[in-house]
Image (cartoon, rainbow, N blue to C red; front, top):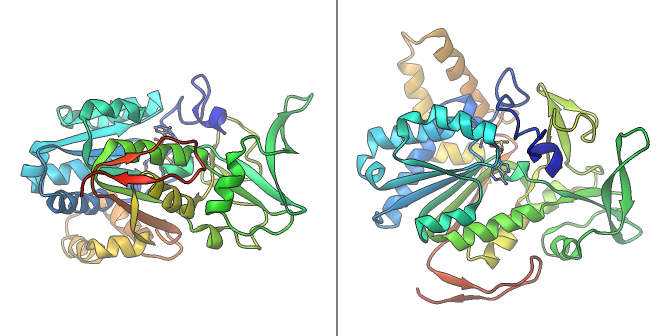
Length: 363
Ligand SMILES: C[S@@+](CC[C@H](N)C(=O)[O-])C[C@H]1O[C@@H](n2cnc3c(N)ncnc32)[C@H](O)[C@@H]1O
């Protein structure tokens, strides 16, 4: 999955910026309407106030895609929260050179506010961060391990290549001992033959976020759920899937580098492991409810009221907004996890999967 999505020479995300929108393979909320970025901009401003308006406020966006969200959020912050804009550093954390170029183009107007990195260790240059880590459809794009329950034992589905050069699944033992530990801590009861996914990368990211963040929040928006609701007995094949041109493809192992591969996010794992790195869960809600809480309905009504002279394109986008309300729309199966880090904490080093103690140094 890592090679198919992120290989430097032929990865799905690394070699092109054409994954998104009508001519691509999928839509994200960032392409649906600029209101998404505008509502989150108000939330960022509220977090800034809650932190007492620190001298430097940093927003790190993980996987900004084509940069639409950053453009929309930054436009609102510049227009309506000048004091915050003056103290703001917006860091785009992006692995794909092609998408980084697209972001640099769309954000050219914000050149002095925006920086790029693809490795959060670089974030040391910003010092301990006070602000927000924001991730929209980032965790679902990280590589996963596929596991299967067989005769009360957890096995792993590895990817093998046949003589014809085609990839196929090959069941074998777990490739890393911590997979079993992670599943015990943050998985669900599986029935015999049932598959599920484990993302070790997500845990690595929580560690980097917890380390870089001095005070502030992680806002993670994605499709997925807590493990018990995600891996129900009827979902025998797990959640790994592939998309091409808005169609669900039969086999994630074909067309490597040409189709999106994704898995629903196990939010239980983010909540459970986030704690290890000083991140406490503040709320976990449906995206629809989250956006309504930020004023989506009022803002949509205002848009409708002032719709008299809108262009056909603006009308189309405004009508697409219903995706944010409708249960079958983009928001229906999405969740928002907000985690908070209160104060500097020392996180003891130990391998992923083991419970660790967090010592609070200051309150
Ligand atoms: C599904 S796209 C979502 C894009 C965008 N957030 C949106 O909502 O339109 C996933 C994004 O995460 C980026 N990404 C995936 N793995 C990454 C990593 N390890 N480091 C930085 N960016 C990564 C991809 O290149 C892409 O920009």
